[in-house]
Image (cartoon, rainbow, N blue to C red; front, top):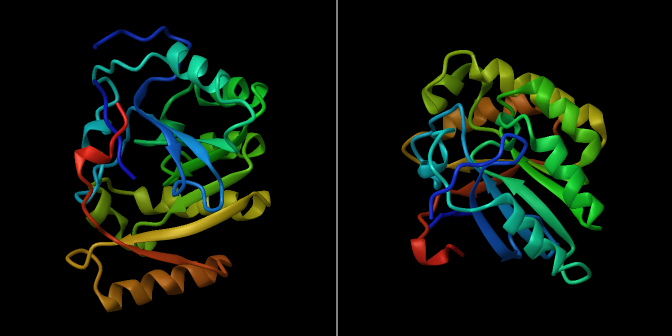
Length: 215
């Protein structure tokens, strides 16, 4: 997935800060036709991130939340749902309010998260219909990928919340061969099996062109 932005504005305090918006996607929620909202900000800095411009939480953005809501209002009955992606959506305190506003339009709600904020994730799980949960590596090896000590503990706790919630989920790992070798993937698989994960999707890292972005 990829995202981009184009006129700078300061968001209102109660609005979700949107760093990118894809009006039509068939790949962000398997089997569903969705719009994807890319939230601004992420506490981790994975070197292979497709959306590096979304990492700074206070970066300027030109996409107004009101405009996103206006567009979604015009697509009721045409889209199956809306996916909140990022960045890391749970970084923003306004995420639950944003999800409720989108659901009030009649859309099902999807979420992409890597789980850096376990309690915030637990709080929004009752508001969503599906989650794509990104696992970076074996939990003891997370800091090498994210650049943040202790990030593996956060991800492990978040995964427990996801599995206990009963929300339909896709547990997946993006594999950059320079970062995850076969032995490291085996350690990851062992961690997931111990956590009770039955299905685990491996997706190879690939580059995206800015031409893929809807601005």
